Every structure is written in structure tokens, then in C-alpha cells.
Length: 348
Ligand code: ADP
Ligand code: MG
Image (cartoon, rainbow, N blue to C red; front, side):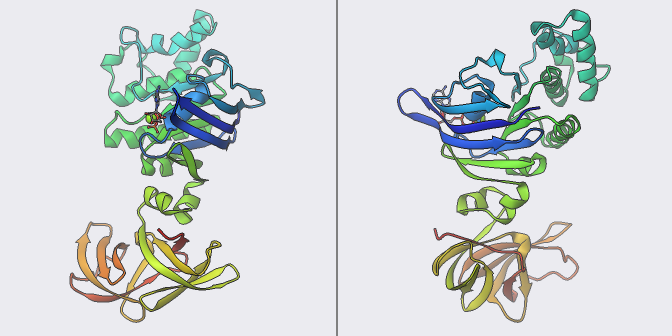
């Protein structure tokens, strides 16, 4: 497994479609890094530039020590798993997995034993004689994973590999992919537009927006310290509340909402209007001091209670683990925030 490095890499289609706008990125060897962002933000193009299926129009791409920017796909030592599996329908599962191996010069016997080992790795031992049409969607995608794995590429690329699977299979196949990646110490670049999937499988997430990188971090870092409203909104659920920074003291800021004050890291923001991002689980509902609010919706969902709180600040969504004595709709409450709860973001 090798690291991947992007230095000012861009891709423009035709004269003026900027699909990727000069990005810098370091993907460490043996890590699973996800490119996450809304449709059209440049994820697939970024992935295809690593594979050599698109040529960068600016910058340099390195795989390990090698500058691969101008190398054709066949010389890059990467493999890609597509959303559509792209299995050959008339070939058996074994032949599908052997195909790339014989293509890259392994003799029949060696290709066969590697393919069988690959199928075992993805949990498809004994399925080698079947046709793709005799497999479920999840099994077909595992064949596609095996086919890419057996080539032992320096980097393995996945483009929305779960999007043709139903919800239950999606969870299972993503866990399989993550387990194999960790067992073999593979470098994986994984594309998805699904934030939950990204949070679940990634060592690191690259959040993309409009052909650029919005933020890079571990799932935890992105969830706990989003850099702006876009990331806060895109990763997990966030309540965004207008507030005023009334004092900055070293790296701490004191904010005010409807007369209630709370102190938290300033993140280099100056006094004045700002936004507070608060996860639903970090809202504390009490009855003493805090921001006045009314419970306008209370829903029991089994493992927790979900509340909508409405006040002069607007509306927030809160979840509480306490399901035994729930609040009722119409209750007047005081809202505060858990200690490590809210994060300050720039205004707007
Ligand atoms: P994503 O995978 O995040 O949905 P893509 O990388 O596929 O985004 O596309 C990024 C942008 O580049 C989009 O605006 C898309 O229309 C454009 N684009 C992608 N491929 C081509 C192409 N072959 N020719 C012209 N425009 C393209
Ligand atoms: Mg795409």
C-alpha cells in the first residue's frame, strides 16, 4: 500500500467546466479516506484522476514516490470498484476475478489460486462456479471487490460502491470493505455522498464542495468541530442558532442568546454576530436558568425522545436518552448546552 499526494491538482473539462479546482491532499498509506460531498462537487473526477481515467489539467499526483500525473491508467498500480459492479455477465465468478490477473501476466494456475483466495477473503468461498446473475446485489459487489483486491494494488478506489444495494446490505458490505481494508492495511480512497456511510467507514474524511475541499478531518473532528455552516450541516445533524459574541478572552469567547450566556472556544472569531452549531444530543433541557423555549413537538422513538423546541431564537431539534418521564408538547422549558457541546462558526 502506498500514500497518495495531490499538489495543486485541477481538472477543467472543455473551456470552462471546473470539475476540480486546484486541490492539495495527502492520503496516508494504509488508511481509508473518503471523499464526501453533494452531487457534482467533483468526487468522481478526483477519484478518476488517481486511477488515470481522467488526466489532471494542472498540478501533480504522486503515488508513493512516483509522479503518476502523466501515466496511463494501466501503469499506475491502482484498481477501482465501480457503483455498477461492471462484472462480465457471461463469465463465472471465478473467471471474472481471474480476468485482471491473467491480463496482467499471471499464468492460469497462479491466477486461479489467487482468485480463489480473493473470493474467500470477501466471504464468497464456494461461489466460484456461479454466474453473476445467480448472485444477489451484495454478492455481486463482493465479487467486484475481490476482483480489485487480488491485483494487490498500491491504492484501491471505490466510487459509491453501495448505491445499488438496499439499506440492510449497504451496512453489511460497508463493514466488510472496512474490515478487509484494515486486515490487509490497504490504502483506500472511497467516494460517497452519504455522510453516515462516511462517518462509519473512514479514517479521514475530505468534505468537498464546489470543486474544492471544504474541510479535512477524522469523523470525530468533523462532527465536533466543523469549520463552517456547510460542513456542520452536511455532517450529521446540527442546529444553527444566531448568537452574539460579547467578549473574547484569550481563546475563549462568551456568547449571548436571549440574555443567556455561555463560554466556549472562540476559534479566532471576533466579537459580534456569529453562529452557534449544536448537535441535537448536546442540548440540555431543564427548568431553571437558560434560554426560554416551548416544546412544540415530542416524539418517542423507542431508544430516545426527540423534541422540537421553539423560542425567540427560532427552532431547534433535540434528542434525550431519558424516555421514562418525557416532556409533553406545550411544556415551557429552559434550554442550555452541554459543556463540550456547541461550536462557534462565522456568521451567515
Ligand atoms: P460528483 O462525483 O461529486 O458527483 P463529478 O466529479 O462527477 O462530481 O463532476 C464534477 C463536475 O464536473 C460536474 O459539474 C460534472 O457535470 C462535470 N463533469 C464530470 N465529468 C465530465 C465530463 N466528462 N465532461 C464534462 N463535464 C464533466
Ligand atoms: Mg460521482
